[in-house]
Figure (spheres, rainbow, N blue to C red):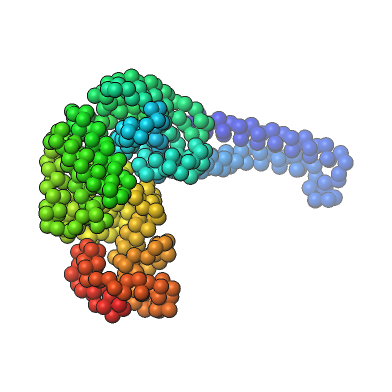
Length: 485
């Protein structure tokens, strides 16, 4: 820095001296053609003499001014560099990766679940690394489901890198080809081919993740990849049944829900210590309960709690189990326990939108509204349309609920207007919010068009499903619903 400043001042001093000499020479030339004394009242000799005396006096002044200007510029550069450093540490500037579905070279439906299951596991492994941002499973699989071109996909989701590949299976052997590509220039950063027994699939997943992260971030320590903390099972039969169960679960039909339950039970029979099989069975039972595939009975609720509790006991580092346990606690109005389970899931996996969503919901119920909104916004950013949904309404409605609790009319209105198909909670809360702010709404379309829709609801049961941690507010909303319905 010192050498830089001296160099700049030397340039200024040299330029100043050259300017002064040139000025004296110019005055001498002009004096032969212009009568300075008649025009200005000074003789040319007096002007030259003044210039000789002024030049040495002006030099330090010029140097001081140049020094201050250089310091100001350096400070601006330093601030800009500092700003860029801060940006590089900010979560929004993390390198964004997508793992797009691998090609199934067998071209058979029976083996497709294994290919997709392995890709889904890779997405999960990447999502547990806080130094990067990974697109959600739904967004990754949208590449195939919506038939994007690579360029369209890159532009739509602002992807920096893509992991792609293909897989062929033959009996108990697998052949996997993988590439990591940089999107801006389309360059392949690394690629590899693996031939392995199915039992070695976890080691190959580790190598894919490690090579990708080392290529992007250098040789950092990845504690999340300690296999002992997250291996679901030593039984390949149990693992394949687990992947089949997850595949059926993601189809969101009553028939596939039952198939998922059947195959997950086989996974548990093959290895009763497979924590993920228990966690996903609890999740599939919860799906059946939430979608009305099974009757809401005490036995069903007990089965859900049994399997999710056992999953956590079998593997305290399984974020899926903690995420699902947070959902169960929320539904049972155990709000503090829901927050603790959500926090643990987030600590284990900070990039999964389902985790950030349930943790945000739990924070709202524990009166940590600002933090809850932040997590819900992150879930919305990571995965605008949750799996099994066709719109962003579920994410948007949750964020609206947060701003309602905050009594933030402006932001609440912003997200309320994003809802495409009105849900009862958002409708009723908007009535309450508008009433508190003395805003007329009864002639507005959102109010009138949904009066008939919600007229026959058991509104007391529905309001209970808001999972409010505020008895007074719950009573107030029940009275409001009775008034309008």
